[in-house]
Amino acid sequence: VDLITVAQAFHWLDLPRFYAQARSVLRPSHGVLAAWCYTEPRIDSAVDAVFWRLYHGSENYWALNRRMVDDEYRSADFPFDPVKGETHTGPFEFSTQRRMDLDDYLMYITSWSAYQTAKDKGVELLDEATVQQFAAAWGGDGKEVKTVTYPIFLRIGKVRPE
Image 1 (cartoon, rainbow, N blue to C red):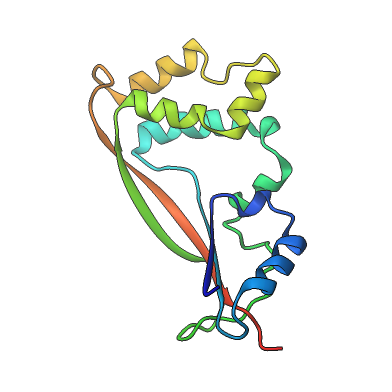
Image 2: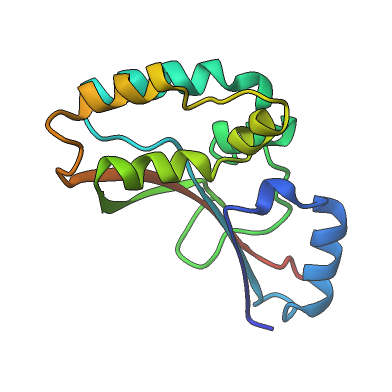
């Protein structure tokens, strides 16, 4: 195998077991492992302010290993060598954008593991007051499509020679 990729799931893996399996299938000295995550979205100061209140209010519902995403995979043990042309294994920062209306944005929030954990405990993170705060920050009827920017952080490296 020349390349293994892990998108937005690296922090859920048992890394020592995963690395052992990856090394067993990656081509020695050439096989590459790339793992990336996206972090909190950015829209504008009004929406982001509501977002951060919600995000910080949801901290008790995030799994502990989610902290690896919060620190952009910097704390992850990553026992691989830099790929050709690089001096380190990252994280390297990129971003992606998606166009969303308010309903799309709120749907994204309901995809959070913390949202699901809170819901299982009888807590609605997107209660009526919070949704109204988002609607006011969004402006208009919520149908306006805005650009949502997600920062992406990549760790990439090749298998060390034996």
